Image 1 (cartoon, helix red, strand yellow):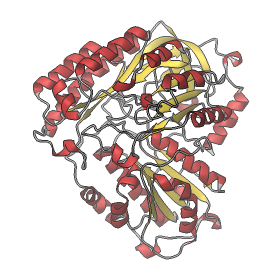
Image 2: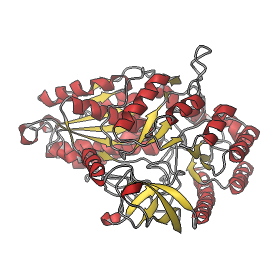
Image 3: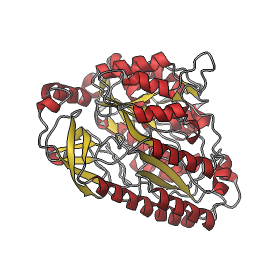
Image 4: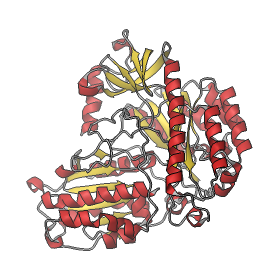
Length: 554
């Protein structure tokens, strides 16, 4: 399984430094990338997002890449299907792009394929069929997704028999993908993910050229069990989807058009999924949705349970050591939820709340909650939850944003000193109201404002890292250090694959929890020492940990 972590988007958890990325060997690297079986630590201290260009229609975005495709194609379409490697066509690889919700989708798809007898390969060039699980939130994400599809198509000249496109781009642009990329064998949407096995079997047994099979379906897809997964993340930390879809009308965002209306996953389904994940070695659960803290709001008066009740219930699972909340919307922090976050030891004092701006003029244009509400909420959260780590994202250069609006945001960021934050220059998305608003801000101005804010949040994060020196913190080990020396882990204020990391000199198995002294700061990351760490502090034996690693590697 090849995972390529996208730069986080304004709707999702984000970081102002370079993304942790694992790439298939064939991938062209538009920025600094690493190839690893575990997520790489985020050492590069530059802004994640490449400069967004003026948004083009999708077909123009395809045309932007067509010269490369034409240059690389070495066989006519009718000859791109080749015999399977070793005569056995049951090897599948998946290139994972996008957010944690896409990661869950990918793991579930791979779990289905594994149950069907397919072998999961880490390297796409070793597969008979390559699945590209795409992202489509902003133009940069779409361009990277198209690039990944083209790279998978190129592998047909070397023995790959089929390419399948899934994910948000497949859901949003199925017909365009089929028309512009006829070398793709299938485009599959959310509703028909459970049919990916039969589709791949069809591809393997087909002969000659055929236009892509388009199998998308609707957006409001019913929930299905999501615990039988082939894990492509750390085996001790899992994303658990508690809801899907979004009912908000943010003018810059097109996600509701392909993810559907907001709907909460049933309580018992979540609890069963958590228990099943724990049975596979998961000790950290990260709750995700489009608007995670809205969970339960659609249950009605017959079921009064809300996210606070779910957190208390999940905390009763003995093996769970940590829980975190990602993708929270400002409007759904009830008094009960704030109390639950503060009072439940297993809940990390870490909240991700994308705010997008603070000027009322811009917030109104975005259709987001006003400044007074936001400021009141943030002050309440910090007062009621000691040691809280706040993550947020902001957008610069939204249509109509004046220099005064930007300065208001600058002053707010200086005052709040967010522990984690990501800044994005506004990118027009076709189909959104913001794309047609008057007073579009020149791209150069958007980027300059983004860079100014990025510097401010990086200064705050350096100061926060330095303030940790001399303290003792709980660290969970995620992977071995560079070259196999030492270990790399995270504090309770860092989400997996998203935030900062901690480097330790001790070599400890993934999934180990240790109390470590923070001895230094490496820019945003931390240096720690856990000299007393031994078998007694581990959640599992070294042998059990190695078995989990071996299973994760396939």
